[in-house]
Length: 341
Image (tube, rainbow, N blue to C red; front, side, top):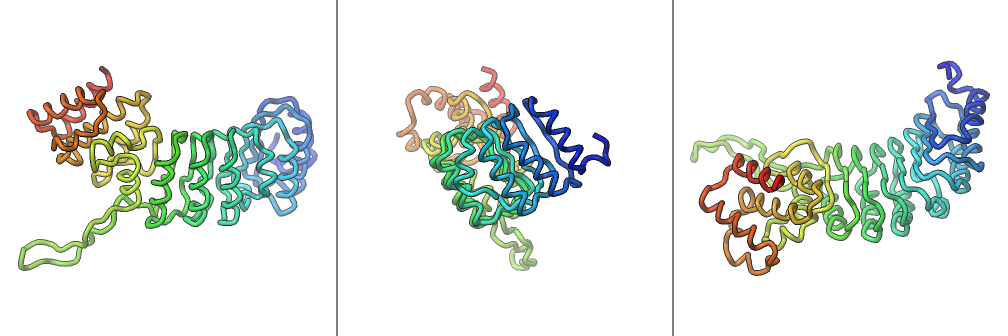
């Protein structure tokens, strides 16, 4: 289709007619008129064979939202749906409309907006849905108020495996308890993307306060854990005891930043959770805990509640730690050896 024809209803109508037997269709442009959107909605409401559909960049007005909602409720073929950058206030469909979309396995609603009221509808959908595997809600200006409604619903959902909440507006102080609770209570989620939520920090403080003339050093404000560090410690890598390490979430890879800032071990824990071998994940986290995070775990009193199958390897690791006095390079070599053995 030539550039000048992208937003012409006649050209769109011809394109849709020629696409009715396709398995996948992606279309959309900023020049799409409301008439073009209406044609797309009418097309989706028909008996078509399309499994994967994407509408990208077309602005959808109030009437277009009604038409799309009605069409998607009637459609029974689409399993992968993308409504990207359509100026939608999500989820834009009523609860009964969402429930009728029980055949969806992939849903991308990114680059729209997600007010708190819409989050309540989406939460009810997620609480009862058993088919959706991947949900993308990135760049939706979603606040912590919306997150507080959507995330708890995941504790009742056993089908969703991948959730993208990147580049939203989550508050640092209020977000971590919700996410920790979800990661402790959900056993199906494989990936959770929280990157780009700029208010979520690894830690706070350390600000220069002046010079301490008595002790001849600079004075700084106390450093406290931010939400990213709290999520690591509270759900993914609890090093308060060896049993707590073993009981941490080893399944979900949580993406929050691109580096291990201030000993957060974010990337290391994410890489470990991506592995397939559950026992190996536990062993690697035990090594990291013993050598880098909480060396008090060498106290034999911590060994009382460790599963017997972990004891031979654990004792081997402790012996190596006592003799070699690991530094980070030694840890890297040990992790490599454990992975390839």
